[in-house]
Image (cartoon, rainbow, N blue to C red):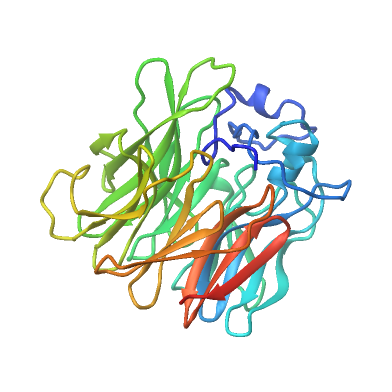
Length: 377
């Protein structure tokens, strides 16, 4: 598999550079990720949709469907190519109990761009992002869709606050640094906390999680040299106070790749330290400096440079389920016991979200609209 740049690799500086080739760019100009990731294998002439991030409600795994990677590949790396694809915008659905793909949930009959992230909200709605266009929410029972046009474009990944508010990262717009966006349940923009940047660097916001014990948002970034002609981004991790966006901590090493917090405030941080992949477990009452708090559990002592921890989901028994691009899944108990599973490899494919339910682990795979399962033991 060609080595992908980590997560969303870079902001193309300015909407003209990023979206100028599109006939009708979004009204709120958005900086786009550079598409130099894996070349997904397909025999079709048209860009092929594939499965992205997902979330569970009941026995159903809902997940995004996007043509981003294949469209970019077909357009020789143009990250805005997905905007020139046509077709229905859909959420994938997979019945975990029967291990069966269900018909997708159509949220727009004809749209430019697919769905990137999905959040199953306790209020019954499914929240989603499309990155290039508006985010929104859909009622899975009635297929009613509400769009969050006022929140703007560039929204990437989602997280839930226990009081019902929804958090999103805005990767970046017009070459400016990204932000953490706070929405109410109806999608109204309540607050936006811009990321601070060092001189000559654009800070792009990627993944995030809410920490109830500190009323804080943890996130990771791409750090992009301004006027950069290409190359890999640097990265850092940050913790922001949700109330006012004040930065509580920032560090670059170890590299924070993904994070999740349980309802009791226990944190699960997947970190890369040289060639080691670690899961740092932070107790809610820890008073240590945030970049050092908790205890680390070794997941892999020879973590390859081309792999990445793409998601963390918490299982009903409290275990953390860590999904890697490669299809390796680590299931880690609260005590730190690790079970490592390997889903089938496929040249050019990326795994996004794995969930553990009953005795199975099922994961979305971006090589078409796919969910693969295997026994958890």
